[in-house]
Length: 438
Image (cartoon, rainbow, N blue to C red; front, side, top):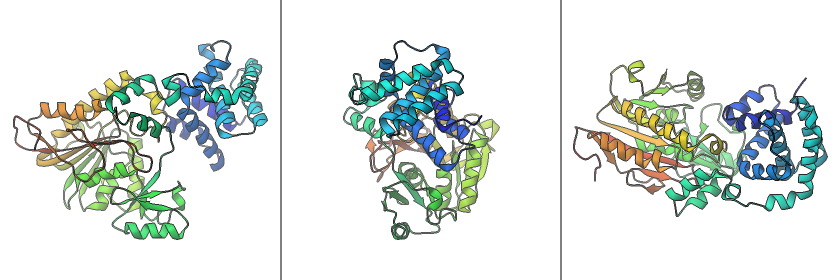
């Protein structure tokens, strides 16, 4: 029997509740046989629920007489999907209630038809009241308490704005291929198509007023333009690749930075990522753009498995991180991360940093980036790295939007601009006692 879109949505949310996978992977799995309109609806429901996760959780607990048993958590997912559609998407009430009642049968819980029907109809009656009630910081900001506390402590002057930004839809930003087209000329092309666009903060970036399907963009298939957030684009600008340099792009997937480096210079780029599947996305981008790079599937921290002992002129290291700077693009981050997982990530970062540093030549430069806004992964990590490596010198980064942390530049997510991103540029020299340059 063919599943309804709402059955797919409930299964995605149930899997997220159990942290079985991330949202994008789950949506790919459940969208394989769906038409474009159904895919869009499924994505809207699931992304929206993630953005309102803690508020929906509180509403559900008020509507249920008693908590559901662990084996019946799929019913929680069904209820939350129904509440979100009724309260936030303006879907037709009768159709929503009827179909989610039917989902209980699809999911092997026919005895719960009356329960789901009663809960959703009760929400309809109390909708305005329940949507207004936000009695805790978690329901107000739709973030877990540990993350609210961490952001508030890290950025006391900016934390509220950051939390607000994390709950809004992000801008769509393009990167113009400077080898093929001028940015201003491409903006004019978009304008003639009725697409409102403006220059972004990064030199090759174009910010769209409204998202559009990438295939509808003039020149996309021909490699004139790519989709890449402007904060991410700054990484290649800061590294400043030169012709004939040998450059490592570590943790490279999905390849935006790899391609940008090659658009900027005639350099030899080695793109390294631990996932063979993710490397295929880099290959697709390279083919579309007419660029070439060497692709290696390996763990960056285990250099013996991939490094040929030829030192690099430059390394772009986009460390695995909490992704707390891109929550607005990946709203499930707030569900998948915890203080425990953060500690594990920091340990992994330390291993990768130390390993890739050994592959850099004297006088070479290492740009460390993350899409995190947490100091433990960023400036604290760089400070400890400098303490361990007397041959590492921190270089001042000029002209990049963000806050000076003394150990790098932190960009916080902004409504009309880029995602949360951290940058630290290190240069390798003969060992000294102090790794921080003036």
